[in-house]
Image (cartoon, rainbow, N blue to C red; front, side):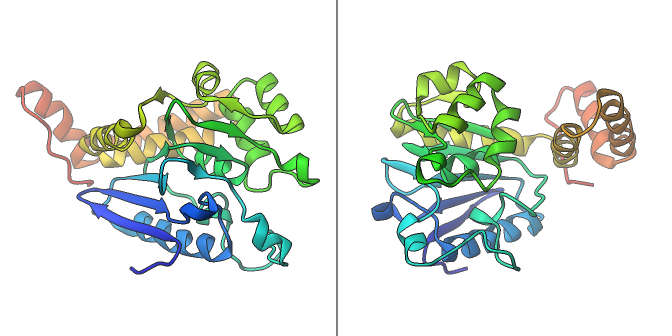
Length: 259
């Protein structure tokens, strides 16, 4: 698949999507959203892929969000109609395979919303995070007002959304926005290490667990526990669920086929 604004690679069972607009600090215009949507759809539907990594070109920015230059020229990625969701997957794109954000620098506005739509977030010590939209008389529109309060303590989410102020990598780690702070030259290696770990796990179990996490966020606890029981019951009928305990008993590495 050939793209103008992104790079899409498949390395074994791992997909690597790179926002490739380094001179524009990897900001997202309409074309980038459409191309990212195509890449995410391919990742979702390719049974040979079990995890994905999202990053930005260069070392200065993961993404600074919506391309405000394009917006100033009349582009509106949030107009009603059948257009791609921002970044291709922030809305209306359920993907139950793990996605890892390798955050290499500024992660602002829609860039942070892209990261929030991922499941695991790593960053470099130089990274900075923020939802500055209110500075420009707009508001987060790609999930920021909904996902950030679910990802970090409410007080911090309110502070970031309502003031538009940025936080640094140390703060992001302390409040749980990222799980790891990694030197820049080791960031992708760590992301692939985590992705390969995920790929070694039962793919049906990983997908079911991710779906349970997502669905459970909108359920009362008792409903979420009931859903978990149903999901586990389905998994227990699979060949992979028989292979896992068998491999443990035989003291060998399990081989999972996703069935």
